[in-house]
Image 1 (cartoon, rainbow, N blue to C red):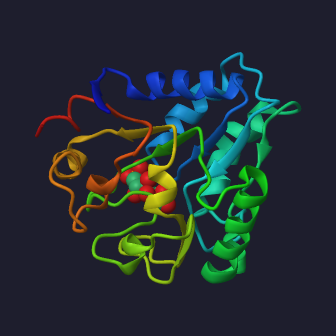
Image 2: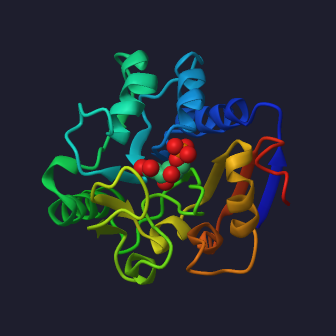
Length: 227
Ligand code: 6PG
């Protein structure tokens, strides 16, 4: 089931949904890029008990955690550090290990925690690139065809920053109970329209279709302007 919400402040709505999941002790997947920062900052200021939640990541750039490109680093600064003691159990992708070893390690960690060949995460937050990529699954790349692994190595990024990546796969994303796609700004309007269109490997966002969960698009007016 897909729902599209066009909101004045999608980051606020997104923060509220993440807060509810965290309070329930959910396995919550954070994402990178610049869009979610505002949501993470809001979330950090909310009165939520994160202590029984687990935080995972949708994708990571293969850099050390303190590098300015690190997705974990952004989430740490905007959300995890401000939460202080009593925060969630944080499972970061180890970008510094490189794409292959980093993906293997994360896959092992996911399976150890969730005990399934295709782990069922409770809530997966994603952004959308201007080329309609999600996580680090870029248009036309073979990573889109991975069917049996929850995590994949991405040797070459399809967009800036051009560093190798580690990414959840489509089967892992589509096994989730809830997927949120948070997208803002006119520069993403075309990508949003493509993500809402016919499924195509040219627009990985169009392949995000949870098979037994809910998909919600949280958009501002500008991002929704071509729907
Ligand atoms: C990354 C991402 C990526 C991101 C989109 C949107 O590591 O870059 O996780 O999928 O969510 O590219 O990024 P912006 O919010 O910066 O536009």
